[in-house]
Amino acid sequence: MTEVAAHAGESLPAWSLPKDAVERISLPGQWPDRVTREWAWGSSTGAGARVCILDSGVEANHPLVGGLESTVAISLGENEEVVVTEDEEGDLSGHGTACAGIVRALAPACSLSSVRVLGAGFTGSGGVLLAGLRYAVEQGFDVINMSLSTTKKPFAAVLHELADSAYFRRTVLVASAHNMPVESYPWRFSSVISVGSHEEPDPFTFFYNPSPPVEFFGRGVNVEVAWLGGRSAAVSGNSFATPHLAGICALVLAKHPELTPFQLKSVLYLTATNVGGGT
Amino acid sequence: MTDNDDLRAAVAAGVTGSEEAFRALLGAIVEVARSIFGAKASSILLLDEEAEELVFAAVVGEGEETLVGMRFPAGTGIAGWVLATRTPLVIEDVDKDPRFASDVAEDTGYVPSGLMAAPLLFDERALGVLEVLDRPERSLFSLQEMELLGLFANQAAIAVDLLLRARAAERILDGGEGELSVVARLAASVNALEDRRRVAGLELLRNLAETLGAPPQL
View 1: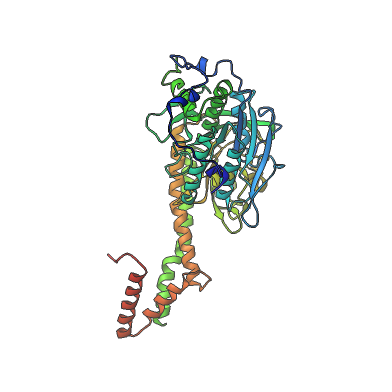
View 2: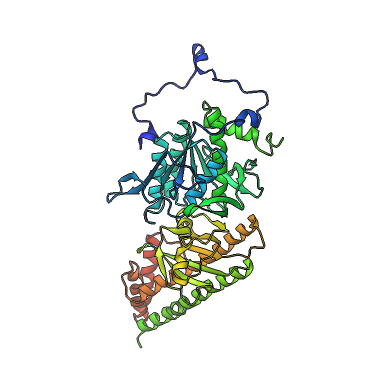
């Protein structure tokens, strides 16, 4: 299918563990008996973690965004081929800038990049979304913030594959759950961290949901965010809860870069406000 | 008047008034949405897929005199984001930035300081966007209102789907380019046959329907 999806050329090992190989998979650090927020991200600024905002573009010079490592726009060419260009238009709706500002507020020293998958025309937007996600996974970002979803079933299988590829390549995909009762993707896949909204005002308050498919609830109501033209706005929606969790992921990964997405999700669970993080 | 004309007239009678009726329904939906949220204005924008533009189909409050029929590119702005991502969102307390909601501002001079927008989703398609502009500042937004917005959007989506179906039927009646115009012509031809041949013709159509896998008639 794709390099990312199939790991072309990768030799397939036998998935078993001989006795003499046990040492080879020893973990690089011991977890404490009780995982606390202090252990998980205390004193972390996000420095070293690379976060991608897959959205409408980002206004790079907005004071609340604080600069971008890279910014590209994805489009489809005449023959449906994927075109990746330097993004010179910035943010076409304000949404990507808002998400970037939220991540920056939580993880001030992380690296932010923008992959714009919206605004290049409405038709084919599903294809652009897929191409953008594939590009972002190939870039090896630590965290991809995906405050959007598609309801188009034909895209679900490919999205699922991409989400799994990201998971195995240690790229955490943080995706918005849909606010409306419709089937959409990729947030429903178990390889991503799916996020809905709660109404609490604290950006570090997040809840684990024991009734999936939505796994976590982040701050998503009346959030002060960066907006177009260097301005600010108060916004609500799951798409703003998502970058809160993405920011927390960046903090944890900056402090514990060895964590796999599975381990990171476990840390989030153990430090959720309604599990062990409330104290 | 021939039988053929009778059939066309009968179908036309069912379809002709429907455009107005569905538009009235869309108007009623935005009216209720504005009223429930205590907002200054509310509108429904429909996606014109060919032109890749959003068109104001129903407007109540600020802009209702001028906005209906206005178009703007579907790929930009808040409505464009909501449409492309199929995700509702709420923005309030935006500074008076003319770029914000410029689709409304350019034509009316009215710049809202906030808006709620939800996609009109039907099956796997996004048909347009429902917007509610400038809720009163007295109340903070809550998740309950987001849910309410979604309910209105779902209702509007059903109305829009009916409107689009009625338009498609009209195109067929007008002898337009619609792929399925052959069905209307077929129905009209069979209906125009004299009794005995008409019975045989209907039997033929029933068999054809069965062959094509249509569900049996109840």
